[in-house]
Length: 203
Image (cartoon, rainbow, N blue to C red; front, side, top):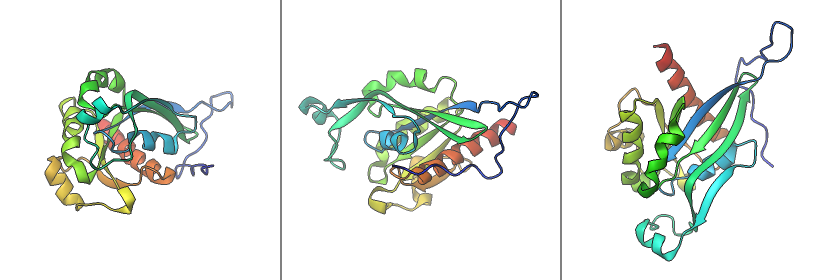
């Protein structure tokens, strides 16, 4: 059983004029990235409800299309979306929508990002090529996003400056390292996106 998240520092319960607690503000956030980078794991690690997943078995036909070289143990893949939610503090609740990673399911992205405050683009440094499409998507639609390098086996193959250069990510886009399996680490990565999106909205 995962432990509860610590409240965001300085968070206070917001109350209406009659003194009743006000429900937290709902915020939509998208978890994106290439095939097998850890999107489903990320949503599952932090969601306070049982995540909704649309996992399907990887068939021999799909295995011939999707590169399993770095993820030979992967037996399922997201074909529509992942969904979960987490209350960060009494004032804010994130609704998380994970995108499918394969290009052939890219037609779903427009619907998934509709109304999103921002996005977390997950990167596997062993397969940087798989992340270009996600970065380009958010840049072209001018949706605030942060890049999060998933530390598979606790290791990152490349320096963050090299990752930024390889992905051609602008200096103002936050770049961080996280562990998609760790609840606190996922929370910190989501907060990076949230702070970046709010700063951009205020600027």
